[in-house]
Amino acid sequence: MGNLDGQLLSGLLLSLLIAAATAWWLAGRYRRAMLRLMTAPPPQRDAAPAPRPAPPSAATGPAHFDLGLNRRQNRRLALLLVVISTLIGLSTGAFELLVVHTDPGFGLQRCLILGAVYSWPVIPTLGLLWRWSLWRTMAAVLAYLLCLLPIILLGSNAEQTMAMVSGWLASTTVLPLLSLLGLTASGRIRAIAPLLFPAAMVLVGASLLGLGWAATLVDAPPPALLALLDAIGAIPTLLLFIVAPWAIGIWPVIGILRLIAGAYRRKRFSELAYLVGLFWAVVLIAMALPGTHSAGLAAFGILAVWLWVPLGFALARPWLAPSAPPPTLLVLRVFQRDAAVEALFDAVTERWRATGNTVLIAGTDLLGHTLDADDLFVFLSRRLGERFIQRPEDIPRRLADFDLGADHDGRYRINECYCGDATWQGALQALVARSHAVLMDLRDFRAENGGCRFELGELARAHHLQQVVILFNAHTDRATAEADLGEAAGRVHWVDMSRPRRRTGRAVLAALLSPTSEAAGAPG
Image (cartoon, rainbow, N blue to C red; front, side):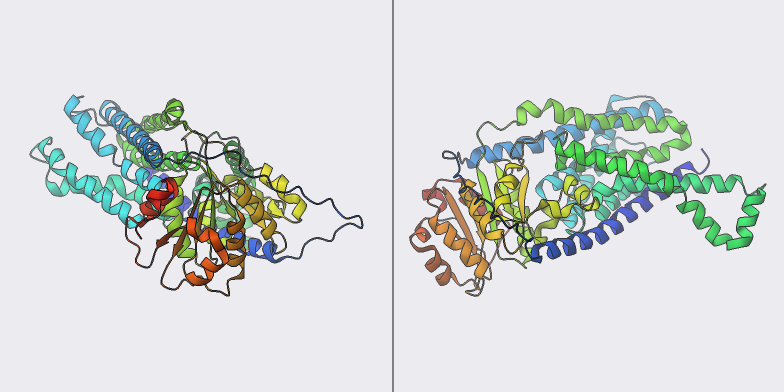
């Protein structure tokens, strides 16, 4: 196959780099656009006053809070990821023995060992579900492979040493882990880079075709190519062969982004299913490349086992379907505490999504958690301003657009209100009225935080709320917060986050999902 595997490997790595770099740049542009729209003055009103919006309707009926049900739903989703990964691993092992490494013949023991090895991506997929850090994910992958090492050695012949087996395991995992590093390591690009990666692959593929065409012209260059070389030089000509194909490739890129955004909007997949599918695609492509030396293009038949991902999610949909009406959680926080709020989302809100909806006022601090495929396409189409609530009378329309149904994986999406300085208070009142529970992060809260004090006043008047959990630390002005809450302070679950521990997130989730008498003493 010549140097096909090397070209494809280079193209894959370059696509990862381009997706990550572009995502970093776009995240900065998105943040600046949001800040500009958030602080923009409201549009001029017509001469005739607009009708006052109807008062926000309160949440209909009491919600069902069940910590055990939440844990069951999360366990079921984790089990589904394990089953999908195991099926892909076993199918991959069988394919390798039947198509690529055919010399010793097919054996059940070898197939099972290979299946266990090739199932290693189950660890990163669980990390995507539970929002592990990259280093924790890599440590878990290493532990998984170390557990398999003696089993592999026992099933191998005497010629295969520990060094050889370790090298093989490393070569199997390094490229996918690099992709995980490039696409999800930073919270700044975590929501954007995976969406851009397929588009980057199209553009890089177009450039590789352009370079391949240029290589065919070297031995007998046409007069037009010689004239171009004389006019602009060799390096600019080479760059032209790299960039010019983008004029054609940009249209498939736009189509891919539009397709992803539309499919996500229509709930064809969830963001978790997308990330799991994308990661497994990179894993299988990386596995196919070495096989081209012995099996040729047939090695890419391994990509067919990727179909276990959509098939698994489709078959498990009834099993994952929520069994109770979803409560709505409103998340409030002190802005400009990006790292702390992101950690809170990872520890609490991502697990809450197995129980109900999450709503919040949009901000730049949670961009890596709330931005989705549809948001990105709207931004690239220069229509981000349409998402912002410009006038108070626009609030009911925006709330009516919320996506409150469960995804195929049984989890609920995060909905946010994009507001300016003139509309956020009205939007907050509407969100409080529609919510069943509130999680408020008051770490580092001071009396000067006027926005948080307005929110506390609204919570004091919201007697319909079934659960209110407030996080605080040693720097929180709790006396001011309790004074703003008034009598409502007595039904608030205060969780001390001064010395957060690993299980603090679970304690906060338990406070949200347990009866008041049990949650009041949630540990900090």
